[in-house]
Length: 83
Image 1 (spheres, rainbow, N blue to C red):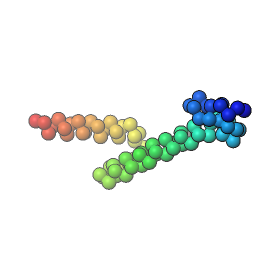
Image 2 (cartoon, rainbow, N blue to C red):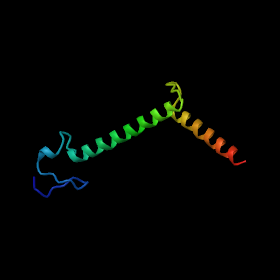
Image 3 (cartoon, rainbow, N blue to C red):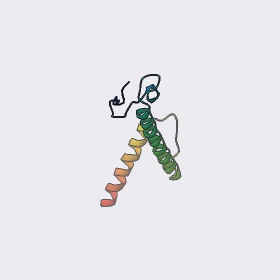
């Protein structure tokens, strides 16, 4: 391996220690894991905020249906305030 070898995202690959057993770049995996954890934290913050407002989660109802209901009630609320 040469010092100038890089992954497709530009991370320098100095040795086999810079790659996972799958061949994937370790730094790329770290960045991907970091983004995933940030999204998970944001989702939990959203859930906690909605629960604080009194929303009760029902595992039988798809999240997309809950969001659509919240959006439509918010639109109805804002349009009635304009009158």
